[in-house]
Length: 348
Image 1: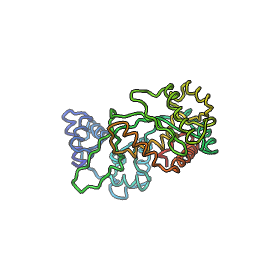
Image 2: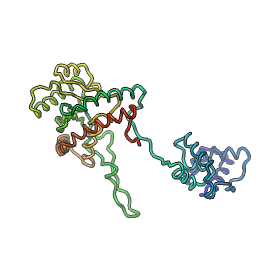
Image 3: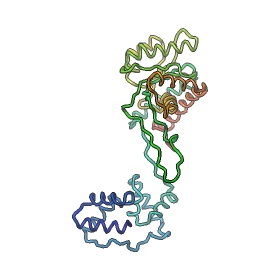
Image 4: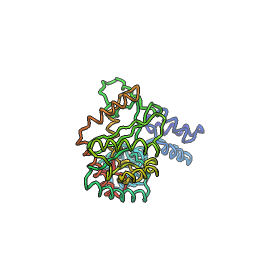
């Protein structure tokens, strides 16, 4: 249905007592994505109420190619500045030129393209950004001296079935073929909490948390950290973890009094971590995504098989990649400082 026919339908529906919202719903049901926008329907309903009876496409400047004037470009720019989510349909109606001319202005004159907003972990306040910068500087000072004595770790859920990435699920199809179906990992899918800790040499601890147990301060202090430190000493041929530096995030178990006291007793230095900053935690930006990508599309019937598969993945990672993840950590800290604490992933 042409836009003129849609406007006629708006007029008839309005005369029959329907409001703009109802009229728009009916147009969407009939025309789908080609339906006039709700704001356009409302504008025409207002015109009809004011006595307008013409719905045809009247001659107006803007239809030919010479319609792209500096005034039109400025109008499009103004509308986008006021509403970055505005649609091309509304731009057409507001500026009074064709869809092709609107697209030309957007791409060729204003050099714009529309993208989805990026997801961020948290809405950062000015204080959060300031803290991210301050702690990034502290961590950077440590990392600049070398990575050899640093252990970093965290917990994460591992699912018995992990869906493959969107990119890896793409397939070539002949015209008319139906797309294959992929089941998303459901929130209630079977899963188990794993704890991972690694150094520049690789993963030193992969701990499966007992089913039904919560990682709290007591468990972290009495079971998890002792195993981490024991493995570290064995791999390094040491009999103490004195002067080792531990990095983990600000989760409640990590910050509990019993854990703080245990680290003090063991003379392990606790490295700071900025608030709301998974983008600055090596497990979050490197190790966990790597493991879960490798698990994509695979299904496990028990936690033992899942655990063995994960162990095979981390063992097959070349040692130099673990080292490079520390380089990446350092670069991320520099970037965080450079952008004054903002989330930087996805920035131009």
